[in-house]
Image (tube, rainbow, N blue to C red; front, side, top):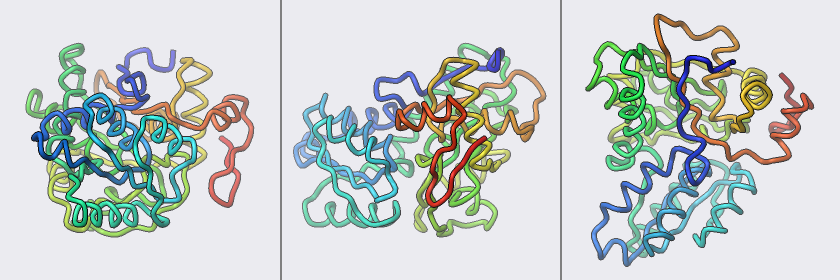
Length: 298
């Protein structure tokens, strides 16, 4: 089995992604007046779905701001949860500007997809569960985007086991946190279409939490190509019978590409399964899929 000695977390949550943890924790901590006014967020898809899901259960109005890069299937899934959708520009930064406007004009509470204390602490519960199940872990491999997931996982894991290795994996193009860590400060990147669309977006130049967490607690970040992500998705489907979107399959992609190093038991977080069904079926068959203006095949 491909995942014989690895733990799996994330894609089997109610919304098909780990994001429900941070979203639910953040909304549960809102005071009654903030709940009444409602919440807003920008998202590449899964955080918006998580906010919409938790908000509907708690009776909180939710507005989700999405760039044009977010696949229609993800936007439709959010709308089905009774959230208001706003399409805003060609990047997550554009979507965040719209969220900021709604905070200013309507008094909504912004729930960042990553740079929010309560969101980060919600994601940290994954590390608690992994180490409770496997205290012998020497490494956790985590999909890397804005840093909410890996920051929370690293914070909790290293508090319990300081020597554990935290490795982040992301796509080659538009990897904001990876480039920011290289530069030693938050930087702006150009977003690009990717099979790992949920890992897109910037980290905000005024990043408050996740950049420092990643800089101090993440041991290594790795890049994988679109072809490698394709192979990761296909291997999970065909060998493990697991549906994983590109952003959830980057760890397996790095494993198959020989980019990971091991010194003991390793857990790999498969963070989401919300890919377009036609895309998943094409990948499973080994057919090329369109990513932006090119066709990709593993």
